[in-house]
Length: 147
Image 1 (cartoon, one colour):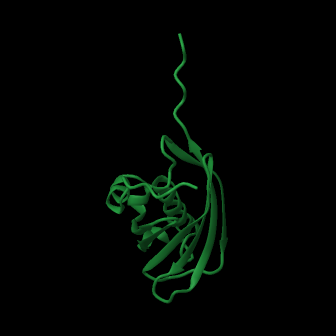
Image 2 (cartoon, helix red, strand yellow):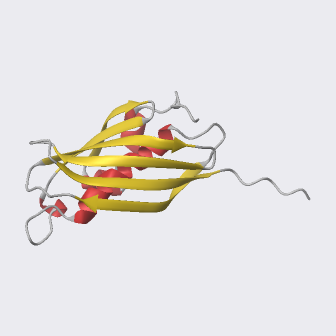
Image 3 (tube, helix red, strand yellow):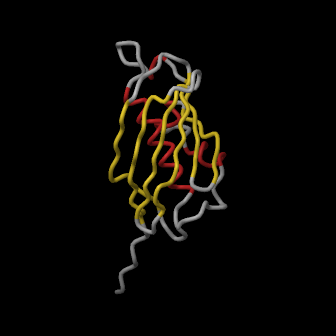
């Protein structure tokens, strides 16, 4: 099983978000430990659908980002990166609140794949609004060709 990398910190992961989708969405990692990563996302008008409820894509963004950074923090030694090969979301409710909280937990940390489950909560009342699962394929450097 892959261990939490010592060279990855919350600060490093949050810096990666700056000009990318997680930064634009306002996803901030708040806790990093072995087999678990937590985040929060302050909600603004861009996170809501025209019906005034939280947009499903916003929920997926916080869950997928949290699981993605959890994968980075648990990459096996020598791995280059990862890519998502499957994700699934179930929406249990919604919110009109000001913040959501996400908890991602490892279900499988293998050499070639990782599986992460995440739960997204309304931060104000603790109501669970979504469950999420993703499978990540670990990417390894390509061997150099012999000439």
